[in-house]
Amino acid sequence: MDRPRPRRALRPTLAVRLARVVVPAAFVAVTGTAVAAATWPGQQAQIAYPAPVSSASTSTSPSLTTQRSPDVSRDLPRPSLSPTPKASPTAKTKTKAKAAKAKVTPDPVPTPALDVAGSKYATVGLNIRTDPEMDSKVITVVPTGTKLSVTATVYKGFRFVSYMGKGRWVRNQYLSHKKPKPAKKSAGGISSAACKSGNRVESGLTRDAIRVHRALCARYPQISSFGGTRSGGGFHGSGQAVDAMISNSSVGWDAANWVRANAKRLGVSEVIYAQKIWTVQRSSEGWRGMSDRGSATANHYDHVHVSVYGNRGTG
Image (cartoon, rainbow, N blue to C red; front, side, top):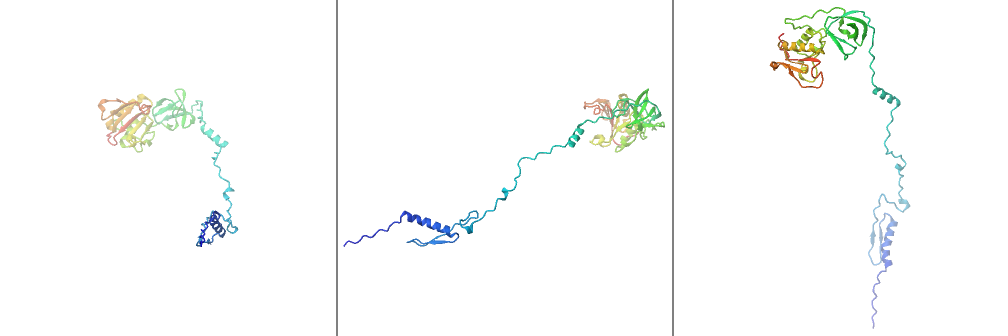
């Protein structure tokens, strides 16, 4: 008797195999956050876990729908990237700028009438100038005690005077109604009397430098301006130097040679004038030439420079 052949297990069709994948996925999507279990014929229950819900993702379920807040930044004005234009200067600013650039016109020098109103005496060696300015031309220097015919005109500290029949200008502060007395001189012709032109220059000077200042002031009334201490070091910085300002070269050389001849009594260490130098250390060489320093003042053409030891003078 023929036995019936056992039937082969039918292999699942392609549709069934696809259903195994699609159905669980759809089931999980519907259940949302719940865990779904599905049992397929002939197999154990399969547990499907949902994927973690991202804060950025949205659900198809109305109850789980997340509403996005409106983009506020879209409604705000965005800053401009173009540079802020500079404010143009006002008319007032432009006017001030033009005024600053404009050259200052000096006051015109007066030309008063030469009406003599009296006479006064020079209390120092006084410069007779062409104009009432410190940098104006010096005609000559009159000695202390010179009587001058003066007018009533005073301009910027200068008085209009009559000198040799012409109108000239002198510093009014160095004029006096009384004739000044001659300076007292010590033995040997070296004066220690205070200068008539003032002793403010002696501030900070050593005893020898003060001695030189007073000796030159008394002996040479033509020298009315002196220089003393100043910053920058050297002899002037330490108060060991005096500059006697003089434009007359003959008077300048006479003063320079006189200081050199009395160097020991005055406590002098060196003398410089008209680009020449003499020092105690090299006294046997006399006046020695100096290199050009570029200007009349730097080359000592407008003043006699005297350096001192400090306190060695015997006069």
